[in-house]
Amino acid sequence: MSHHRYQPWDRTRRYVYRATSLRHPAGGALHRPDCGPPTRGTGPRRRPPRGVAVSRLERSRLARLGRFDAIVLTSALWFLGKFVRFSFPPLFERISDVYAISTAGLGTAFSGLLMVYAVLQFPSGLLADRLGSVTVLGGGAALAALGALALAVDTPLAVLIGAMLVIGAGTGTLKTVGVRLLSRTYPDQTGRALGVFDTFGAFGGVAAPAVVVVFAGLPGVVGAGWRTTFLLAGVVGLGVTAAFVTRVPARIPEEAGGADGDGGVPIREYAAMFRSWRFSTFVAVTILFSFAYNAVIAFLPLYLTRAAGLASDTANLLFGALFAVSLVQLLTGEASDRTGSLPMIVVTLGLATLGLGSIVLLTGVAGPPALGAAIVCLGLGSHGYRPVRGAYLMSAIPASVAGGSLGAVRTLLMIAGASSPALVGVISETAGFRPAFLLLTAALAVAAGLSALLWAFE
Image (cartoon, rainbow, N blue to C red; front, side, top):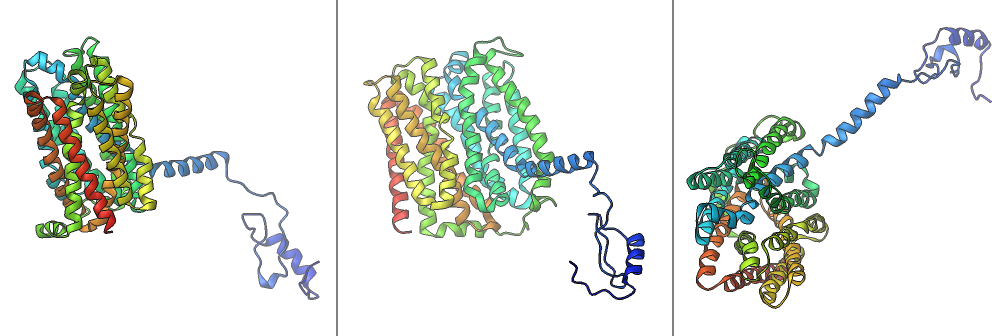
């Protein structure tokens, strides 16, 4: 029953209103005060054409998927960067036979790659603060891909070493600038985003030994079979780089207009961070970890064959297990968002120390299963630590100097990491692999102790 009080003229006016009024798209008449009470239209409800509805749904789905362009493509570049770098250690024995180079020479060449990678950290972060992350990342990824393509054909030793240095320079932009880009794109989920990012990179290390083994047993495309690994990395790298520079700028608001920094941050502001004892202590933690970890990934396959007496294929399989557990980064990254970074750092560094120490203690007295379990423990700790380290640093560094400051920290830790393969190579030839790996275990133990000190005084 209507609560409207009709006037004597309502019956006639309602008829006129029903016949002449505009209708709402939902089917009801638009009410006009001078035309009596509103009445429900009798026409059918209008729906958008089916094609239009499907198109809107597809656009909505694509818009949701578009949010992940930045993290997927940035992580894919990091995957390829780690893949091409970690393709060298499984090839050390083959490269040594082809070029008649000693273990110390191989360690020095790989240290050269890592040294160039290290010194590019601060300049790449500084350039990202001024030119934008996409520009720097795209240029570095393209350079690394070209370096990989140079190794696709049979070349002299000088070309091999030169290409390694080019790869070091190109990949030197990927981590610092990638962390900066993702931390700004996902500010409320930095730990999770960096966990995905580092997991992609770790899978590059998983894939590299397996791909090397596959191509080493096949005829080459334009060179020896093992060189096809670098041909694949170069071609795919150029394709992913093109997709990155095409799609990612539109997904990152601060990058849409070009550079996202103001270009006026003085150098002294980057140095000011190191006056804090907590920040400097954590930098020492990262340096010690990098020193140990880079030497381990450079020489673990050779350690397993020469010190532990395993077959080459078994050693490469266990080396791949070091990276196969990298999914733990997704858990530790998200856990750091919830519980804080320092507790996770202490736990992960403790696991890494336990794993590497167990490898040394089990050498000569245990077989592949026990050594594999120790390697898995080392991998859980090492990979679990990496995204938490990045999240802690990005929370401690002001946004205005994020790229350059992170680059400065990574320069220091990578210089330490770049020197360790050469040192381990020398120690292994003079005292043996076990003393060299004991030194690396001690470095991890000190890093775990310093991080526990920071947590205690938090």
